[in-house]
Length: 260
Length: 349
Ligand SMILES: Nc1ncnc2c1ncn2[C@@H]1O[C@H](COP(=O)(O)OP(=O)(O)O)[C@@H](O)[C@H]1O
Ligand SMILES: [Mg+2]
Image 1 (cartoon, rainbow over the protein chains, first blue to last red):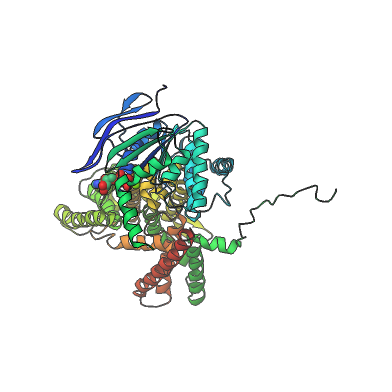
Image 2 (image 1 turned 120 degrees about the horizontal axis):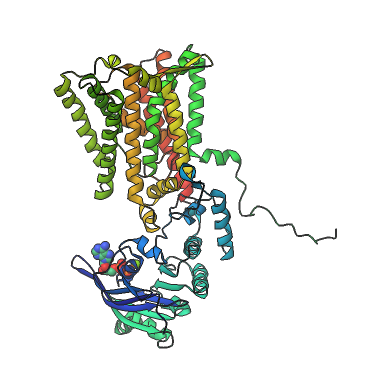
C-alpha cells in the first residue's frame, strides 16, 4: 500500500466542553475520493477544518505524506498542497472573477517598488483555465457574486487545481445546488480525481457520495461509525448508516401510519 | 468563397447583453462623485464672481487638498471595512508634537518632525493591533484613541507650555526650509498653487497605484469584502489592516506638518471634528461603509466637493453653516446611490 496523502489517526477536537470530534480515523489517497458523510452537527466541518489548518486537533495524529504534522494556520495546509473549498467558497462576492481566482497568490511583474499585478496574464489564465474545465464564463471581470452557485463552486475548484493542490477538500459543494448543477460539480470532482488529486468530499447526500466515492467515512455526533472502501459497502447500507438504521425504520413507520 | 464554408465565431458572448458605456461608467462609484463635482463647479462659477478666478481656484484647491490627503487613506481603510475616528485629532497631535519639541525644547526642526512621525505611526500601529487582535469594531477602538489623543492634546499642551496654541514657530531655525517643502506656492496659469495640492495629488496617485495594481490592493478589497474568505485563501488579513491604520496615521502626520508650517501655529483643539469630514468625503467618493468597494480617486473627489462647497458658500454670501447641511445631503445621496449599486452587483445571483 502506498503512503496516503493524508492519514488521520484517532483525531479529536473539543470546543470548551463540547466534544465536536473524537477518535476519528481515515485516509486520503492520490487519485481517489474520500467521502465524509454525516447529519448536520456530526462533525464534518470540524474534521475538515483540522485537515485544512483552520483549526488544530486536540487529540490523535495527523499525517501528511506519512509525516506527523500540526497545521496551525490555513497557510500551513496550503504549503503542503492541501487546498480547501469551504461552504462559503472563500470568494469575495464584489470582486471580479479573475481577482478572486488569484486572491492570495497574485501574479506580479517588475521588481521593488515597481512590482505590480500582471493583470493581463491573470485575466487570460483565468479565462483559459476555466474553459479547459468546461466552464464558459461570460466575462472574467464580472463580480463573482453574480455567478450561479454551481459556477462559483467550479471556479473555486478550478482555482485549487490551478495552484497545484495535491489534496482538494470540498465542504458540502452540492448542498445548495439543484440536480443538474450538482451533476456538474460531481463531474469536476471526478475530473480532479482523474488528474491524480486526492479529493475529500463532504456531503450529507449518500447518493452523491456513492457516485464518485472510493472511501466512505460516516460520522455521527462527532464519532466515526464507519470507514469503508468502495465494494465493502452498498449505497443502500450507506443510506441506512447515514440516517441511523432504526431511526429510519421508526420514521417510515410513523410516516406510513399517517399517509394514505 | 462557397456558402457556409466559413463559420464566423462571434467574438463576444451572445449572453452578454451590450451595456452602453454610459451605464458602465455610471456603475463606477467614483464617477458619480466626479459628475457632482463638475455640477458644483459650474454652479458656483456661474453664480459667484470670484469662484472661478485664479485666486478663488487656488483657495478651494488648498482647502480640498488638506482634507483630501486624509480622505484617501480613510477611504482605503473603509474599503478594508474599518473606520479611523482618531484621524482628525491625529492631525492636531502631529503639529503639536513638532511645535512643542521645536519651540519649547529647542530640538532641531527635522528631528522634531521625525519624532512626531514616530509618535503618529505608533498610534496608527496601536489602532491596527487593537482592532485586529481584539476583533472589536474599529469604530469603538478608534473612538477610544480619539478621546485619548484629544485629552493629551488639550491637557499635555497646557501642562507643558501653559498655553493652548504653539507660538513662535516661524523663529525656529530651519522653519523656512521645511516651509518650502510643505507650504510654498507655485505659480501655474496665474494661480498660486499651495504645495499641499501636490502632496494631495501624490497621495491619490500612490493610493490608486496600490489599490489597483498591487497585491496589497487586492488584499484591501478582499479583507473588506469577505474577511473570512480572504483569510482562508492565505491573505495576511491582520497585516493588511494594521498597515492601513498606520498609513492613515502617516497621512495625518503629513497634514499636521503641512498646516503647522503653513500657518506657523497649531491649536490644542486642531483637527477635532475632521474625522467625520474625512468619512463623508470617502462615502461621497463611492467607498461603501461595510467594505469591499472603494477607490482612491473617489475620496479625493469627495474632498474636492467639500473644498468647493466650503468656499463657494462663502463667495455666494450665504451663511457658512449651510455647509453642514449641504454635506449631510451629499452624504445621504451618496449612500443611497452606493447601496443601489451594491444591490445590483450582489443581488444578481
Ligand atoms: N466554533 C465552535 N464552537 C463550539 N462548538 C462548535 C463550534 N463549531 C462546531 N461546534 C459544534 O461541534 C459539532 C460539530 O459541528 P460541525 O463540525 O459544524 O458539524 P457538521 O459540519 O457535520 O454539520 C456541533 O455540535 C457544533 O455545534
Ligand atoms: Mg458543515
